Length: 126
Image (cartoon, rainbow, N blue to C red; front, top):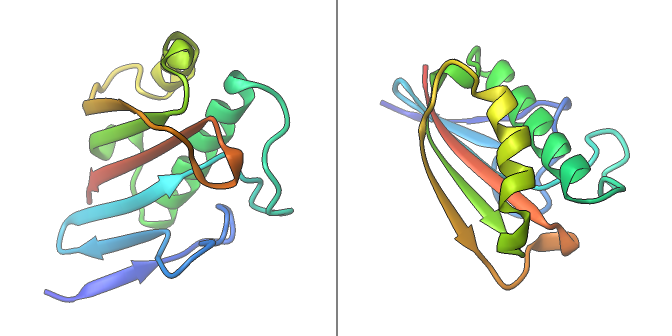
């Protein structure tokens, strides 16, 4: 099996030496998404709800580019600068995983790239 990098212009371009996602066999490893607008490359304005929504839209675009969707997600990891934002992020996240509930971890971090409040990465089956 070969590794295949995946990219879509419907999600923010990588801001470093990494791929938006890497396909390996029937698995898709998606890099963490922060709330960057895919067109402007600028940080989403607004608070945690708006940032979480933008992150989930970015993840959706990467999954879609691989022919997958949220029902194919096996595991997700959420990184939060403030655990006080857990409930708000959970509410937004839950709208995208209404019928299927992947395994998940939520981790508090000191900071995230570009001053983001939230970053989410996913692993999906293809």
